[in-house]
Length: 150
Length: 150
DNA sequence: GGCGAATAGATGCATATACAGATAATGGGG
DNA sequence: CCCCATTATCTGTATATGCATCTATTCGCC
Image (cartoon, each protein chain N blue to C red):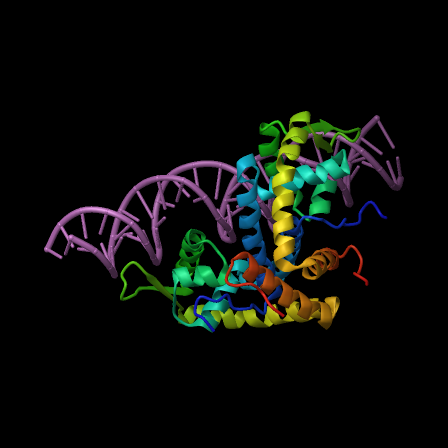
């Protein structure tokens, strides 16, 4: 065993966090030309799929603390990518992509698809599919939105 | 599909990051009585296994940027859990657990084992084992320490 | 031995993350 | 209609994270 080898970790949390750090660097390297951070790209993509949602609902979808979202959304609003509107319930902030946000997402999508494809090839489709399925199940299990099932 | 359901994500990076956030909250809740953050616990555990290592080597093991480690280690040194020594190469910082660090790790281990066991039960041993194996493979693949293999 | 490239960490800066507590708005009971 | 519990978000504070850049050493070569 080479000293420079990455040893396996027994802690599920540590193993996920380590993989996340490695993946984040890979994806942010790919997104660097667009100026988007991984979290920001994810939010643009989620809003594109979800349409207009409240901040709380977006926090739930991404399993991000709502107070964390407050600050990330402030940055993205500064860039003009996000429109924050008050809903009928005036406590809520309704969020949607601005036109500039849609353009930014469209600029980023090819870079994202490229890194997704490269990683899928490197891992192989079986591992790729298993990972997406299992990671989504972990999120469901841990956030207690109902037990996962096959 | 209930509105409150967590939708699956197609982005590997986003899915890992979301799971990491959820797992981190679960594990930090369990470690709260010890005052340890997830990263700090992981470093204590890694040092316990690795013995005395340089900061750069620890960064490699955990796939943490070495400059990130500088700050986390400063916090842990403040708490008295880590001893930083200069090595023969005087650029290096050699790290090892202090006696207080070993005590802190021993205090934390039962809490960690409990949350590990509970999560393993919730996911089932097959999924648990698959997840540890696959996440470790992703780290290897992405940090390019050699291709993963079955 | 001394110079320049390479290496190990540290520092400046910006974002990501979440908990505790504050604020604003809603909604139910009397 | 008013009070209070609840809910949605914001703020204060602390840690986590990494890139660009800087400093201190080391190493190779002449």
